[in-house]
Length: 217
Image (cartoon, rainbow, N blue to C red):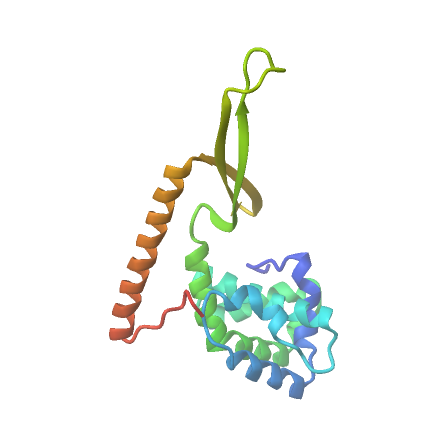
């Protein structure tokens, strides 16, 4: 029995990937290898890579399926030979192409693409947190301080800011709201400025040590 299960959403892309003609397959490997490695490559690659003689929709399915395999391997740290065998067995459950030696050879070549090996590992490190930020927004508005007689002129008004954090947690999209005043905004800006300064210092050390900064790729 296969040790690995390929989700239904990636099965069509996986089958199409292994069924690509050899020249198209080789071009795909070359195009992916030419990309700069880093965490930003993972979400962008399906729209960046265009596969010859393949529709845009199918191309995105194929590349997404390939990325999914790399992410799983990076998360599990499974040796290549073992992982190729596991994937081939998993494919057999929905497509007989998984049994062929050509498919296994193709899988090995795909899983050896260094750009994706490095990017996937960096991406799993980034995601190895309870929550990952998706988007931020600050809403600013006025709220009046009304008197007991709501028809009378208000005492005054308060300017409020609401920090809206949209994030992913355990596969779900969630939001969190935080109320801020002007002083809070200044504190938040100071904290961000300090974090950016620390990142600049760390990148200087990375450059000195000749270590690639995968967070920017």
